[in-house]
Length: 125
Image (cartoon, rainbow, N blue to C red; front, side, top):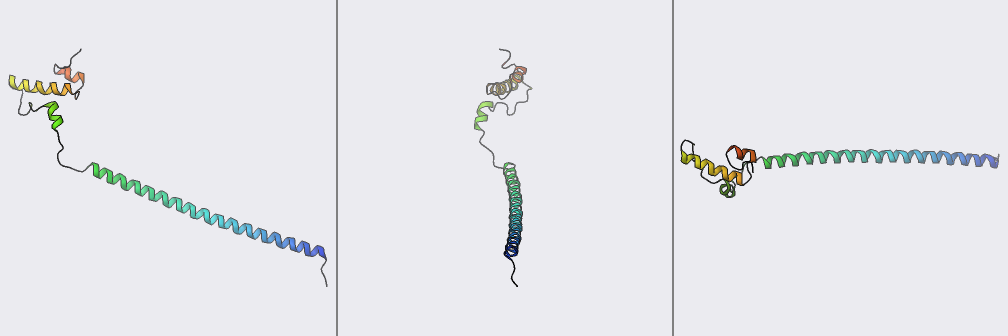
């Protein structure tokens, strides 16, 4: 028994349609797997970046909060002077030492104009 041409064509079209549907489903599944892997990679990269940022922050904080040897303060000693060492303000000589220190701080703009005015230096010009 022979099948008519139309039955063969219809069968071939149905087979082609089923094959196309299977290929589409497989393609969608492959894309879903790729998306899942990419999403996992992105999340892993974010976690790694967060860990790196936290580690660097911790390292920088520890480095900045550490102790070190004394720094060179010759510039500050030049501005403030060494007159104040030992001065107690009890005598006129002690008051001169305090005044010389204030003059250095005001001249270097370490204190504000108002602070200097309280000590009689850099008053209202």
